[in-house]
Length: 368
Image (tube, rainbow, N blue to C red; front, side):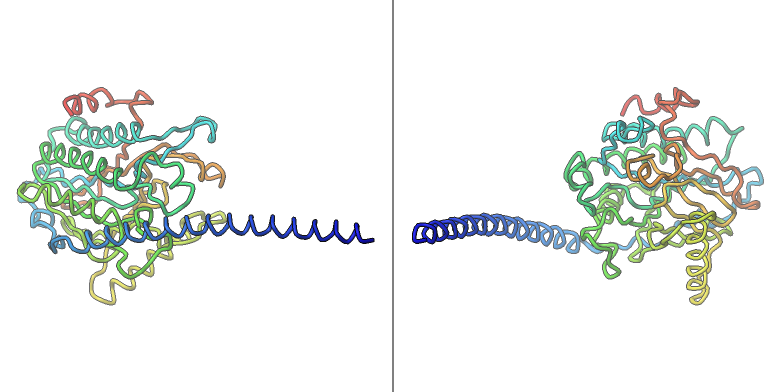
């Protein structure tokens, strides 16, 4: 009995020692995570100080040429290129989605350049002697992949600030090409949900606590001495502007939830449209057309434009059994008398599909 009791005591001591060792490991691990968290908070605070400490410049107004009707009866109108949901530096593994799409930084750059170039080609080369007042290039958010989901933070090709720097340069090149082709460019901007600094969405400081706000301001400052480009970077979630007699409300679209059943995404979109219209009417700022991204599904009705994405089909869409759609962005022309006339979405990977005008589009960017 004595030996048995001794053995049990030794076993208990051994188990207690093992438990202490495990607890010590957990304490060391938690301490390490706490240090990393504190460093992350410091880095975030440093970024916030930089963002909120930037020189306060107003980018609220729209240029006069946007609303003023031309006396030229033969004017073609004002084209609108809608860019959103680039999700720059996200990696999409083709093996996980039956090889129906692939996405990486290199592919994103090719698709962005092709989108700009093809928009220019459609408007300038595919129209008969066009006369344009200028062009609108709306930036609708989710330009970055971001770190709001753990899986994105683990699989993105680069840290978000590096992504922001590279994407900024690409967009500057594209906007310069538009200015060279059309003479005047108006750029309304709203942020998306993927570029936010915090994991959970916030209402307060939604705009400035977003990496895309920094991208927009850096681009606007780059063109500060170029009178051809005008930027609208509102402090709120929506941008309101008019083209001739038609008023557009640009928003990202993540405020709308749902979309199951036969009606699909139309139920939340129509509900959201109605609520926004009531809000705008109450303050005397009603709109005619609502433009949004977020849903990665191209839809163009008389009063609702939902953009596709440059990223295209991904693992989330596949696992959720969403319908397949090629990466595409909205492009249309607004006429001073007839409103929206030509609707010609750009298939962003047209160069892969060998569709026209791929050769012309690639030539435009040959020097870049």
